[in-house]
Image (cartoon, rainbow, N blue to C red; front, top):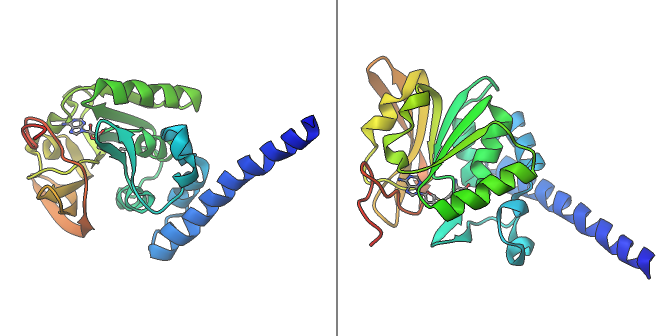
Length: 228
Ligand code: SAH
């Protein structure tokens, strides 16, 4: 009997690895994610560890998933697109606004030297912190608060990723970019936004539109002003 159970356990683990490889091939490579280090990070970070166990069979689906408190872990492709846009070399200091499950931060942690991430819900922050610890990820600093005003103390950042949608681009975030630094942020209405990529050039900011997207709202002093 026991050998039967241990045999059952092994294919299970292997199948998540296989599902991740399929996710990387079909959802990322097929749609134009070409940065090998980004693709490698998506193979290494186990997305199922960032959601509750009852959803594990959907962990590698091509969609966002609920993480509680009306929030979601983003679709893998969108996480990859935002990450690739930063063109990371491994040396960077990154700020993420909207920790949520912690998945995006964990991907960034593999591809940069230090990640700062801010979440407004204490409960989500607590769960994410536990996942980082259990995965042995030590280059993420997490704070509970309003990320629309950034995290000035550690600025300027080489890259900033905002994973919730704002009616306008927060000035504080643009100001916390270093020269040549990049900000990726969804901006627009509550149900549909454009994903913008800004690059700092002195006091100017080049802006490129990456795609249309639909994120949960960014709530804070330079975002939407309440839950309703
Ligand atoms: N990056 C996340 C996606 C989470 S969804 C992941 O990989 O799972 C967006 C998150 O932004 C939610 O958890 C929400 O609570 C948070 N959020 C919204 N407004 C915020 C703000 N002003 N500051 C920090 N976090 C915010």
